[in-house]
Each structure stands twice: as structure tokens, then as C-alpha cells.
Image (tube, rainbow, N blue to C red; front, side):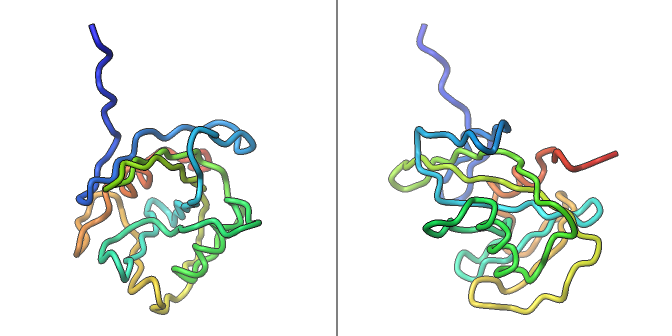
Length: 163
């Protein structure tokens, strides 16, 4: 009997899939596909920061491309500040590696996912990438929709969630 096909954790409207999300040591990134991306799950109380991407017209986690010579952690913090104007209050914690299958060419790649907290959100100013931010509770609908892959990652348990 052939093995069951792999069922993605989430699929978005453009055909991109989140194949897996796994923790483990930050120092041991996967090597079977490129890892050009870093994302941040920034929490304020029981809400997660979502940014409204100007070009895709949807809500997603802050993050973006890792620049040459930059660590995924530094990329995550830089992208968080660039896209939202937010800074974490304390440490940025490694959450895991997300494996994506991207349409239309079915290209596999990874993103490093980090978590952090803030107790005092900063004022947001629209910029070249982001038109708005929202502290999302994980259930409420947002105008334009939340990207399914980002929504899944935003709901993942955080190592820094605390009691």
C-alpha cells in the first residue's frame, strides 16, 4: 500500500502551503532546502501583531528576507521594526522552522520563526511595506483576510508563553 500523501498544515489562496513547523535547536537549521525568510510572532497580552502588507493586501506576521551576512534572528528583529515600528521588551526566542511549499513552481523553502513580547506597543506609521497593524486575538476576521500560513504560525504555542 503506498504511503498516505502529506497533508499540509495550512494552505493559502495562492496555493502556498505550510508543510511542517518544528522546533529544535536554532543552531541546527534544516539543510534540505533554502532558508531565506525570518518571521516574528510578537505578543501583547493574548494578542499577536499582524501587519497589513501593502502589496499582497492581506494581514500577515511581520518578517521578510534574510540579507547577506545577516542571521535569521537579526533579520526577524530588523523586519519587525521596519514593518511595524515595534520592538520587543525582552529576548527574542527561537520558535522553530516552518517548511513552505510555494506556488506556482512548488518550490520548498524554510522560514525561521521567532517569538517575543511587548507590554507597551509603539505608535505605528504606514510605510512602503505596511499600511496598518493590528493586535489580533486569533479568532476575529480582519478586512482582506489573514494569510492562512501566518494564522497557523500565530496560533502555535510559544516557548515564552508563560503561565
